[in-house]
Structures are given as C-alpha cells and as structure tokens.
Image (cartoon, rainbow, N blue to C red; front, side, top):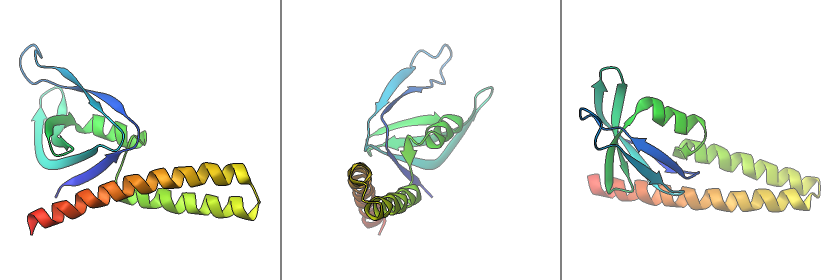
Length: 136
C-alpha cells in the first residue's frame, strides 16, 4: 500500500547514490504543495539502513532513507491526509475562539492559515481520487 504526503514547507533533500564513490549524488528541491508518494518498494543498504522508493508529483523517482522521511514528517514539513484533517479541526477551533474573544488579529491569522491548509487538502484529495480511478 502506498502512502501519500503533501509538502507543507519546501526543503532540499540530498539523494543518496548507491554506486561506489557516490558519483551520482544530487540535491532534489521539493516545493510546497508537491505530493510525495512512498511506495512499498524497499532496499536495505549495509551501513546505511532501509530506503524506500518515493515519487514526487508522479514524475521524479528516487530512494529515500526511512530516517530522512521520518525527519521531514516529525518536523512537520510533510503531512498525510489525517494530519491535514487534524490541522483543519485545530484551526477551526482557533477561529471560534477568536470570534468568541472578539480577537480580530487572531481571527485573520487563523483564517488565512485555514485557507492555505484547505488548498493543500484539495490538492491531495484530487491526487488520491485520480489514483483511485487509475486502479479501478
């Protein structure tokens, strides 16, 4: 089963090369709203650990260390759909609190964040829906 993430915060990732001397090492720039699909295809590299195949926006394939993937996830740079849903619930709560407290600045701040997270959710939903159609 594949696992899809959406990039919330842009970052650069150093792609490891498995050749002797690491002659093909390159840096991949992952931008906000890119979708990263992590597949079940795995490799174990002695002295480096586990890697899994990842696909960025359905066109760039590479192997990423599970340790790196966990790092991006725990830093909040990539989110799964469940994380987006939780974030939306939190932002709605904050907006309600700002309205109750008549706090205009927090209302504007959280409303802006809510719109941004909603845009990410819509993009990820479209990707997931298109993927479902592909496998039917």
